[in-house]
Length: 429
Ligand code: AMP
Ligand code: GLY
Image (tube, rainbow, N blue to C red; front, side):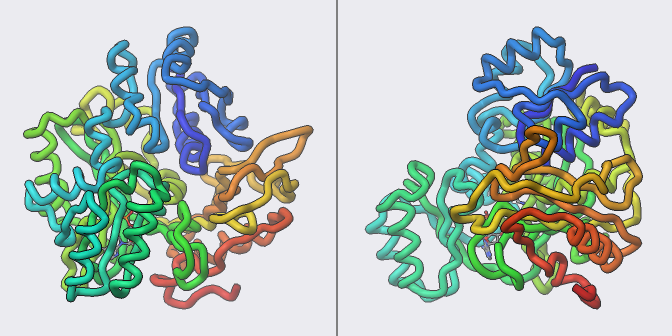
């Protein structure tokens, strides 16, 4: 069968790489793909869902996988389903679990899913008044709509809260996404990511993971799309996983059924695990995480085409995931200046050492790269993901950073402390 992967980041490179290993997959089309994805498939730019549908028909593509949230929130699944094309993901209404924090919070409240207590505001004056009266700081102010992970402000006092309200609701930094806001209690604990495949009837847990969202070492500075990740997340042990299943996944799926949400895809749970080991939902995403995918999918031994087809056909209950006991840790190499202004077009050296064969200890997934005149050049803020296996996270850490030392481009920036919260003895670097 021919398969299409929509997206152009490290997550999509990993997904295309993984699915291309299936003997059932003849060809992978990447829309639009990136410099690295040309080694696993055919990259093509298509600018609308209409063009994608025409292409799918013309090339007889049997299954479409969508990486990022934006096309899901815009209804790509609705359009493909209307023409009876196989596509994985929620429809536009299901995607509201990510695209509207107000929708997600109210949904969680209806079904008793543990999440921080919250209030919703659509008027800046009322928001400011409530925040002035508020006793309980720190608090968290969130834009309702999509903001590339940047619409969340952890605020220490009223001054900071007022700044967030002004940016979101008055200056409209994220446009209509900030017209409504959620204000919620600050939760303490350790964060973790758990992704679940859900086919409308049954579900399968993917291995746990954790990303580092902040640009700076020690988790400081502005938020980014993610500077690195590791899997498993040690905080998600058997007991915590059982609680996630019982208190979050089961009521979530019951709620989705009751409200008739169409969902065949990946549910991403962004969690805070509190000291008493209660898992709380910080956010839902309706797709695979980036950069978590790059350290989660390679740990899964199953044929990803088989898994994806079972997801589409509602046959997840027939599968068991086989996960390697090895850990994986991935480091993002970014362009200097990211997540602010950065330059593109820098030549990247040292990539020949990473052929990405199945079973390799180090895997390299491209994000913002292009291939021109026989070389790779930078073409985005996050450029590469260098991911390594190890018998534990310590070994994976050492191998990943050893590999990073072999890669170079002008202005290459990366955090040297990925995994610091869980590494027993942080490597030598
Ligand atoms: P979100 O996009 O809602 O996951 O928020 C982005 C980041 O903000 C999370 O990964 C957390 O680090 C932090 N965050 C969000 N909500 C809370 C909360 N209620 N308590 C503490 N930290 C939070
Ligand atoms: N790594 C966080 C996300 O994918 O949204």
